[in-house]
Amino acid sequence: MKLKSAERVMQLLLLFKDLRRPATLQELAALLDTPKSSTMYLLKTLQQMGFLNFNASRQDYFPTARLRSLSAWMDDSPGIDAPVAAIMRRLHERFGETVAVGVRNDLFLQYLGAIESSAVVRYSISAGDQRPLVESAMGWTLLGTLSDTAAEQVIRRAAIQLGTAPFVPETTADQLARIRVQKGYVREDLVKPYRATTIAMLLPGSFNGQLRVLGVGGPTDRILPVALDIAREIRTLISTMEKT
Image (cartoon, rainbow, N blue to C red):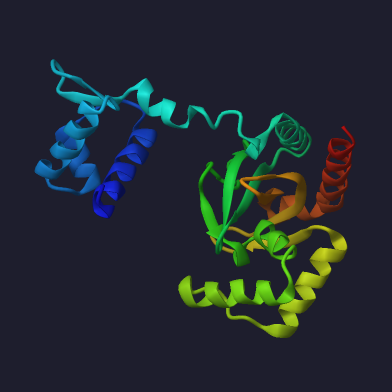
């Protein structure tokens, strides 16, 4: 499949994820901002492959169970296994903030999953979301597992390709050293639209051969007063997990 066609397929599937209901050709074409002819070809192709169901009376489309089956084999993946899920629930229940798990995806931190805070102002994270490694406490915690040289290469590449902050030798060295000593990191990840801080630590085990990192994050004025309690609880839970 050509790249543009593949991109359109993903855009369509993400659109259905947001809509969570059947949609007509006209509606989908408008939302995707693509010609009706191109959208029709895409829909009919997916329908013929069994991934979409077409309701002739309503003239609308909806994903089928076959689409879900494409990733069903990943349900038992070690990304967020039972022990990690239990840690996430415990942290969420005690502190009420968003708890997330992620891995490195080249220059990005990619979230494997999250339990969001129920507060109005909160970190909103979905599985698969990405952000530059250098712009998050979870990302810096993963950078701390690299050598100084390897971390420098990542930071320089991110600055060029993603427009993130430039590499500063002294600052970076200090940050990496502190992360390695503390075996975790506290960082203000967000300034706008509100100030937010995350406490991050490495998890035992891996996903697809890559280290996993856990983070508890939320508005800075809620996180900082309980930061030590959060850090202690994460360490205790991880220690218990390592012993089982």
